[in-house]
Structure formats: C-alpha cells, structure tokens
Length: 309
Image (cartoon, rainbow, N blue to C red; front, side):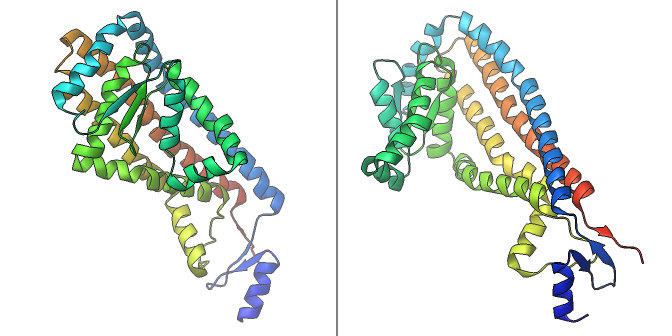
C-alpha cells in the first residue's frame, strides 16, 4: 500500500498494518465512555487505598495528642543544639498565630525566584497565590495539621504545641538534603519523578493501544507508546524516590531524637513516623494499581478491533 493510501486509511478510521491486517479504531464516543469508566475505577481504587492507609496515622495521632506535647517540644531545641544542625543553617519557625506573617513570608521564600518576582509585581498572581496557596497553607501549619521543611532556606515550619512530634522527621529531611549523599539524590529526584508519574497516568488514560503489527510514527508517538506499554512499571518506579526519601528521613529522626527523648517517647515517635510512612506506601500502591486498572480498561474498551474479511 502506498504512503498516500495508508494515510487515507488512518483518516478513515481504518488501520492497515504491514502484515496486511485491518483494524477499526474506536469511535469518539467509545473512547470517551472508556475514559469515564477507567477514571471512575481509578478514583474508587485511590479513595479505598487512601482510607485504609490513613487509619494507623489517625489512631496514633489521637494517642500522641493525649500525651504531653511539651516533652517533644522541649526536646526540639535540645536535639538541634546537640546535633549542631543550628550551626549548619537549620532554622525552626514556630507556626503560631503571632508568627502568622513570618510563616507566610517563609512560604513565599520557598517559591522559585521567578514566581517570587511575579508575586511582588503582578497583583493578579499575588491574589491567586494568596487565596489558593499561601493563606491556606499558613492556616494549615498554624492549626498543627502539617509540618514542612523548606529546602531553599533550610527552614522547618510547624506548630510546636500541636505538631512537635513531626519536628524530628523534618530534621531528618534537612539531614537528607545537606548531610547525606543518598538523601540528596533521592530529594533531587522527587520533582522529576512526579512528572514521570503524570506521564504514566496520562498515557494510560489517553494513549490508544497500538494494533498488532502497527508501527509507531515520529518521536512523540514512539515516546508515548513506550510510556503506555510500560505505564504500570513507570508509575511504580516514579513513586519510589518519595517513598525512600521519607523513610530515610524517619531513620534520621530516630537517630537524632535519641539524644533528647526517653525510650518511651522515642518509641511513640517512631511509631508515628512509621504510620506516616505507610501513607506514602499507600500512595505507591494506589498510583500503581490505579494506573494498571486504567490501562487495562482502556485497552479492553477502546483498543482497535480487527476487521475480519
């Protein structure tokens, strides 16, 4: 078949492969229906896994809140001094209502330099970031619902009265970034790995399965076909840097917390960090499983169908 005829066959929704077989591509509505079914199945899987893996953390968080948080709070500064992390540039900002503006400023400093410039010069971007990111994150930190380590400035932000247990884990992230080769590598891979995850999920959902014997055309088609054919493996691999870096941060936390915490409190903190790590493990399982299910559903419902003569 000539190149022109082959091009026309694609235009007419018919695929003719080099081995002489003919396939009919799925219609728009067949593909759209498959996307809806696959996306729904993915959401069910992710929500189910999320509810299961968050249970240990919720249970432990309740127990630790009943403990004397002052024990962990008073140990924070002691650990920082004994480890010399303060001399290495580590700063800890207490996320209280009184420090609200300081917390927000610290979050602004965590933004890329070009975004910071736009934030200061463009009112629209400033309002958007304030309303949908900075103000919300500031409230979350002040309420003790999260703690963050800002890589760019070496600052840990958390409410010491409500989230002091997490301070040691965040110190573990600081050690990963500044004092551990393996930790620094894993940390630097987190953002690129996120793009790989997005590519795997997107290709699983929107990339059409090639018919038997159908060749790829062009770099983009070859790349997306490779991602589609390996989407489950890529989804799994791309979540590992976060999973491993979080685990290493908790290991570091256990080592440094020994310098200031009694065994009973150290054990409880380690359990808390383990439960937190399980949430990341759940994300790995959820992303991998949902990607596999999405790809299989799309392949079954929207793959080209062979035309029998």
